[in-house]
Length: 107
Image (cartoon, rainbow, N blue to C red):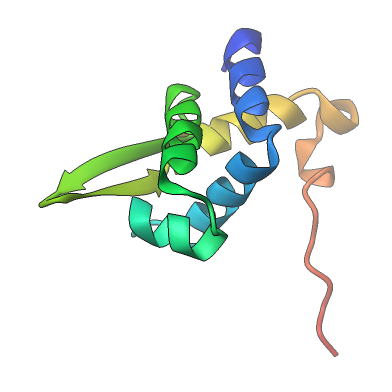
C-alpha cells in the first residue's frame, strides 16, 4: 500500500459514523449486511448512510453486491490487512508482531 492510499483509507475511517459502519461490517464478515440492516442497527438515516458507504467504498475498505432489490455491503478484509501492514511495517525496529495487541486471558 502506498502512502496516499493509506491516507485515503484512514480519512474514510476518521469519522464516527463511518467507523461504526466499518466495525459492524467487520463483526459480520464475511457475510456482510444490507444497507437497511446497517441503517437500523446504527440508527443512521438511509441518505446519510449512503454517503458514508460511498466514502468507505471509494477508500476500498468495503465493497457491495446487488442481490435482488437490496445491496449487501462487505468488509474488504484484504484491503484492511494491507492498511494494517502499512501501519506496522516499520514498527518496533522491524518486528511488527510486537505491535499486535494480544487478547487478555480470561481467568
